[in-house]
Amino acid sequence: MWIVFISPPGAGKGTQCERLVRALGLPHLSTGEMLREAMQTQSPLGQAAAEYMHSGQLVPDHLVMDILQQRLDEHDCNQGCLLDGFPRTLCQAELLHELLERRGTPLDRVLALDVDRDELVRRMLQRQRPDDTPETIAQRLEVYQAETAPLLDYYRRQDLLLTVDGMQSPDDVFRSLMAGLDQVRRRHGHEPEDPS
Ligand code: B4P
Image 1 (cartoon, rainbow, N blue to C red):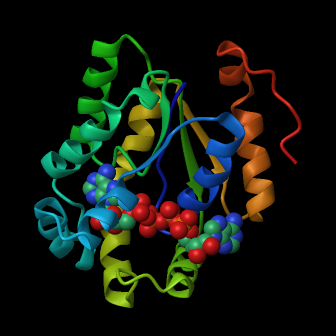
Image 2 (tube, rainbow, N blue to C red):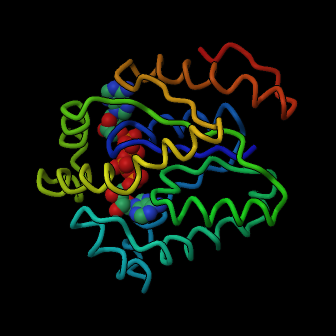
């Protein structure tokens, strides 16, 4: 099962992905987490990514692809995974499409959360991550609109997009996401159960 999760920064992707991977038994591949780990270990890739992340920019596609490709080659991803925060650009979406075509495993569903701008800012300021300063947040929201929001239409046209109201409580968001995945889960032989 191949699932993509894209949403504005601070919408709650990471929060929901943790629950989804437990419920679906899928590997969780968060490009944000991978990049933060690379920064912590001060690997060359982490050092290259740091200046982009600290200024609210997207990390260049080739660096993100390098780190993701290594992880996708691990055997636990053979049957699919939950991609958290990837793709974030049209170029990344096209590279993912090619990669899945080569594997002969089409994308099953693209999840997205809809959250008001003020609430996104509030959540990020509360989170207090080093890249969550008011200036960086404003920049990330702008970059999201320019680079990532167009992917919603891209996936809507392919009939893959499921948008959920991210203003609800975390439990209700999770229930809505799981309900929206019923069909995909049946296709992969999982009997949908009550996610409460
Ligand atoms: P990410 O790590 O993907 O993080 P994010 O978009 O900022 O946050 P997320 O939506 O996961 O929010 P969270 O659950 O924490 O990206 C970080 C950076 O990495 C990017 O800016 C970029 O520079 C780089 N990057 C990553 N992937 C890339 C790619 N593919 N290409 C290029 N660059 C890339 O939730 C936020 C807060 O809200 C939390 O405190 C949470 O507790 C709270 N919350 C969650 N759900 C809630 C709810 N329903 N109600 C109330 N609060 C809620």
